[in-house]
Length: 125
Image (cartoon, rainbow, N blue to C red; front, side, top):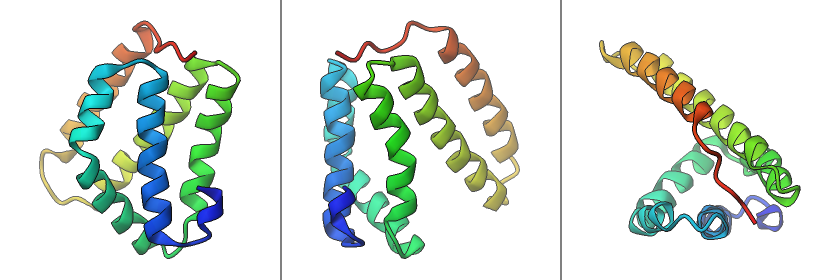
């Protein structure tokens, strides 16, 4: 991904490959299947986000802690880095939303995250 150098098409393909590789490494067939099923949607979403940002660096920077934790074999840190990143995106989306149920959905997501933090971690080998 670091070699994409603001090439949106290349970065998008590598980003999706990164997420598929994590699911495969975790031996999480359900997640891998969902990601494969949603691959074209993920590509469209990633392309839109990167195009709107006008650069790839900030997205790449948010992936680094996840990759470093995986390389260190620290599934808790990898999951925490991912959830922190996902939480920021969700809060930003809710802040932009005028939908009356958005804040309630955010509170519900906080409850889910709390439950997830108590669940068994995904083992990355």
